[in-house]
Length: 479
Image (cartoon, rainbow, N blue to C red; front, top):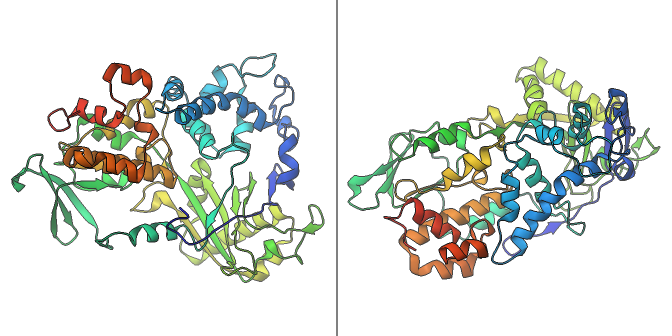
């Protein structure tokens, strides 16, 4: 990223954890955050002490780390193995809640399983309401994406915003993208006189464009709204577009006249110290759930007085979005609720925040016609049963579905990049096979599509994508 973008900056984190009416600094809470720390023991969580008053992080690490370790071994071995992925897919039928409730927790305990109240505590501290009802595989992959097993991992943000990455990539294109042009129809077109068939794209207003290949990076729910009846999807692919789940998410941006969260004059009642937060996030069980702070300090070149006052997922987002009205009364009610929660989390008087309040802007991705969900967030069994079918050739390899949903790393830019690698390499394999080595020299290997030694003994081939495509479209793709 640094090779094509401007500057990256690091951040410090002195944020808060706020649950059941108790608030502590994140740095002081995490090492000893047991069910008693925030009063979850009063609900009955860990009432049997069968995990020995372990922290929620210790319990989750014990369950998830073996899967993460196996996946990391997959990608650290060349040619890559797939033992870790096979291990994960063997448990893909479970939701996270189902796995925790039925599989033995590898800790010294009197009881081999976790009860539902303990699982509720883990979910509240770890993710969002209802998260654990989704695929167990999603929780494992999320843990891996956050590099929680790599204590030396460093986090950076792009100076000027993440749009700088896309802008830098677009600047390298010889043909500039056509913007603000809505596609309404995509179809395979055998009348173009070529085999495999070309693709015709129709846009709003009736204009048509012919291409040898079309790569769709639309969110899957949005792709379904186009006229794709003649693209050449199989029945299983059509069902996968409908069934693969997306996660709801909301954000509320609030503009203040100053960075009160990074102002030494604003003292928190929690510890009688300046709030002094630059970057990072605070977490709470209140409606706002997660507060994300700008990494740009008040004296920086890109100082921002805008705060992501709420970032919520799953059921938390769906419920909160019911308050996102455009009328004055709805805005006033939302403003009061958000400022009240911010005041409680940071230990300040709500009037302090009202004095520097400028504006509020809520957003929920499920309500956007161009998103219809924030990111792919599969349900149990969907990785092993539905995900792979969307990587199979469509229209004899002329139509390709990409985007973060068609990767194991949902919601991340790297997932979108991985899927782009697969789509472009598929084009190379079909139309420009003489360039495949040059492609890999330029863009490297994709570990998801590099075969294990065991696989090579069967197919004598390390290029898993080439084998995958040749199996499903042998008249088009040749090994």
